[in-house]
Amino acid sequence: MALILGLVLLAACGAVPQPFQGGPKVTTDNPLLDVPTAVGIAVLPVAGAPAPLTTQISSAVAARLQSLEIPAEAVPVNDGLGFSLEAEAHLTETTPDAMSVVITWNLRSRRGAATGGPFRTYRQVVQVPARLWQDGDPATAALLGNEAAVAMGDLINGIAPPVITAQQAAPKAASPKFPTVSIQPVDGAPGDGRESLRLAILAVLSNSGVTRDDVNPEVTLRCEIMLTPVEPNLQRVEILWRAVLRDGRELGTVHLDNTVPRGTLDGAWGATAFAIADAALGDLLQLLVSPPPAAKP
Image (cartoon, rainbow, N blue to C red):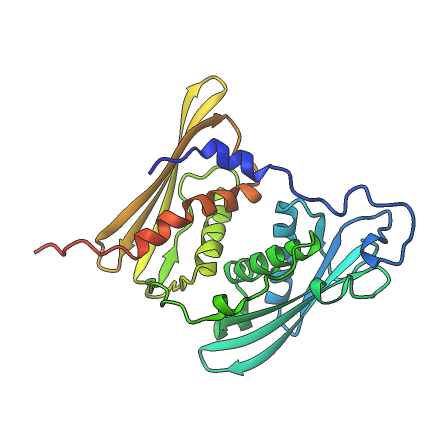
């Protein structure tokens, strides 16, 4: 499948509401409008989570908010930014293999009041492998941080949680059962794409119900990026994902390509990684549920 990558890259840089830029110079009764000179969000460590995961998650949240063009910084304490994003983790169930955790996120103004009531609070319910919860893991933190940051970004921009109607609440057909997946770092990626695109794919697949397993996965997803000069200021970018079964058979591929200005992907990918991941998601999910090829005799 070929996709116009250039449009994806442009979409990542499109207009995004920026409620913290150009803040008013007067104080009002609305704490969300009470913006001091140093605008932005201080993302604090997650209370109740062990080190180093507590700061890994806050760093992932800040990075994702920045990719959404919301000024944010992961800090141990708020020394002057306009808002604080606080989180507290509570264990609800513990087994030798996994921890069930509820993380409550609260956005507060510099005056300490919760900004705007319940639509500025997000409750995140997650299950984390026990070893990764105790020892920390950047990929796990990125998954948790991406979900929380996107949810808080919607709330900041005034998008309320959806109202579930009786029809929507009715039983639905069972979702397709995806195989467990391990995603390898991206070969040949310029800039920080080797890890940032991998983490973005992990995030969008996880949000779609795909379970990650780096020990004994049913499918290993490998990605390769190839850059080819076309003209002095242009290069062709090809992105190829290969889904490989446990026994080595190839399940299939997903392919994106286009010609873009040279250097487009040389730095931090930021929102571009998630835009590309979102563009490939549908085909990757379809590939994961496709029947495997016949085994060789």
